[in-house]
Image 1 (cartoon, rainbow, N blue to C red):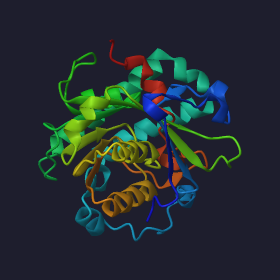
Image 2 (cartoon, helix red, strand yellow; image 1 turned 90 degrees about the vertical axis):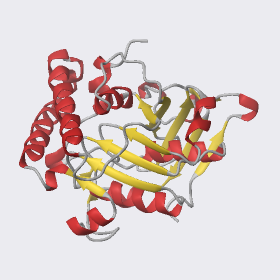
Image 3 (cartoon, helix red, strand yellow; image 1 turned 60 degrees about the vertical axis):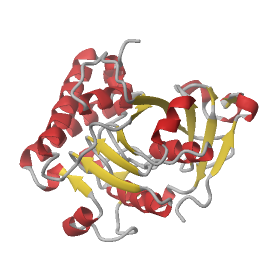
Length: 294
């Protein structure tokens, strides 16, 4: 089982966990420090670092379609071109992190995200994707933006079916930096009951890179007795190893899944960021300029 080694630490008696003393680098952790769960994946994801080399099976179009993994750049040149443009901006930002604060660059990146989600909407009938009228899980930060792009809503739109969850990848003291943990904070725990045995949508800019954030959400919800029946994933990009690992893990958990993306990356850095010719930089940090106003 993919998640056999996972340990979920939860607050007792409704109390939050202060993760500050557990963090390897608390000064550079930009998530909430008081959380409901800390999901420790240990070395679960180390096998997907680097270039995909077939560890979860061959990467063939027919197999992907059979597994309900649909990537537009496998079919359309304009999707490839869009991903080339995202990569070009991302490489610039990775080279000089000052561009994370450049609102002009951020606007260009946002417009590419908007264009990408437009392509996904345009072709959804071809792939029989029906995920627009079901509960939408927004994994903060970027998920707040991408959920609205998926549904064709304005930046500050209030969404009736939205369930907000704060997830943040991190590294813990005493562990190698290739080990991953994820913090989970529920914005409204009661709303989770709506998704038990129901299909849900998770829209994020990269989904999955490793898949740890979505997995942490699913595992933490399961600990509360809540498990969706099916998860539709929409993204601008995903990784070969990440999507195949996540597909296998969800199947083991008895959850159906569909992955629908504009592009795909074949390589992950030791910090679990997309590299090579399909970089995206830290999408959440770039897109923070376009978060909905409360």
